Image 1 (spheres, rainbow, N blue to C red):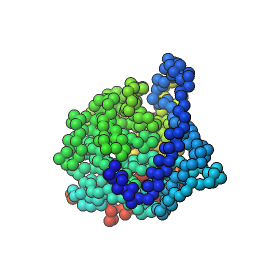
Image 2 (cartoon, helix red, strand yellow; image 1 turned 90 degrees about the horizontal axis):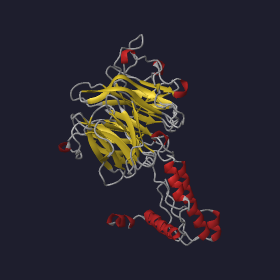
Image 3 (cartoon, rainbow, N blue to C red; image 1 turned 45 degrees about the horizontal axis):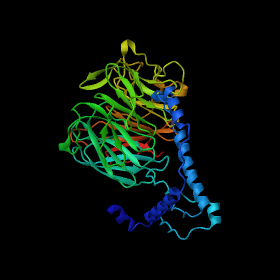
Image 4 (cartoon, rainbow, N blue to C red; image 1 turned 120 degrees about the horizontal axis):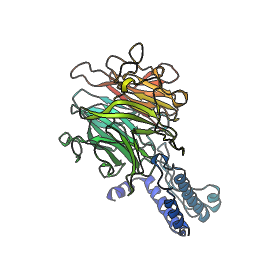
Length: 507
């Protein structure tokens, strides 16, 4: 409260916003309280008895009803304001940063009737406007704390993320554009460190350290940007500055963090060791979790409410829902431990689900192989790899695929772990012809891939081999158009900047 009062003392804009909230609250508090419909209890009981509330997790309702409900509340408040004509116009945020005019006397009735005033503050500004490219940039010597920045490629604006001891390998922008979650390597410890930064005020939060491993670099937000899900394999690195982790050493578990809260991340209470965070669904705390094992399984649960898991599906691992919500890419196969980490041993292939909203008798999880021309003779498989969706729910990308079988092309280079493959659901998915033209060199590797909002290009972070002991890590960030035209670099490249990427696009 003391900090807030101190801020209000010198911030005219926030004082005006607070005054608008107080006036608004006074209007709303005077409205009559509507009782529930008389048949509400009967309808709820009928829904439970009919099984209508126990739907599989992939058929969970979307957001039309909450959106409509919110719109109804806003409309009611606007109408009440117009009717009473006593609420002063709330301040409107100005992108230019010019001061907001103070609120004077109440407007005339004609003015109120002609234009409904704002019923709350405008959305906070975002560091990345829709479509703008932002990327992480690391500069500094190897084995020394290096400066990390987040840069808006269009405006040149940057946010100082302090110093880290290793390069960034993953990044995820919250749907509202206010938060960036990212993962950096932690020096020579063989660990990853998970972070989040608020892109408006620059607040950085260390979320924990994890043993580096396959399938542990996915960062997903829920629809309203309030919660982040990620995976950590427990390791005690408090002596290296990491937050305390009371998990048993070597156990892999999903973790959740409430954005902006003072509470540390908490592990999901629903599953045990060898579980991974696949995705947060919707706005209500449904976390899709996958359990690694000889036969992997996937379960969804409401982690913020006292409900049993909704559904468990066998032979499905780390599904990733499309933006439209009607399809998913997932892993299928049998798994085994290798050097203490789970990876696929036989039949490990990324697959495309059927229509998840279908009410037909067939399971959507039979799926179709993501690669149409790979034949897994004798159980050949990808031990691991990464995939993502394009914004139109038609484009798909796959990279870092560690193929365990013999090459399936005449030149012996397909499938290659150094390549990115991009295709469309509507035109046959992926194949050898889907290889994306990215510049590679001996021992280079793909760090991350992100689609542009329009689906016309992809931002590819390419890790480069070290020139020797003590050489700083380096990576190229390339924008690769999907129309076949030449890629172009972003940032400083390897001279003078050692590492550029991963990248995100403003929503």
